[in-house]
Image (cartoon, rainbow, N blue to C red):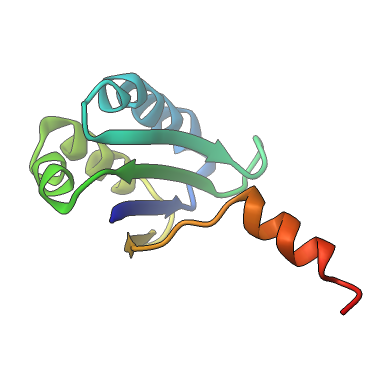
Length: 111
C-alpha cells in the first residue's frame, strides 16, 4: 500500500515566491528519506495559479513520522500563507496501474 499526499495552495500573489521557496527547500530532504517514493512541487501558472505539493510514501508509519517532522512544520507554514484554506488530501492506494492498463484499454477501444 502506498500513501499519496496532495496539498493544493492558492497563494496570495505577494506570497507566491515565499511559498514556492519553502516547498522547494524541503523537496530534496524529504525525497532523501528512505520511505519517501516521490516529492514534487508543481504550479499551474507562474502568475497566479494553484501551487500543488505532492508526496508518495511506502507506508502509513513512515508518513505519520513525516507529519510530525520539522519538514512538515515548514509545509504547514507555507499553507498559512495561502489566500484561502488549502485542499489537503491523503490517499491510501492499494492498487497502482500504469501504462499496461492504458495500453490494454486503448488496444480494446474498438470493442
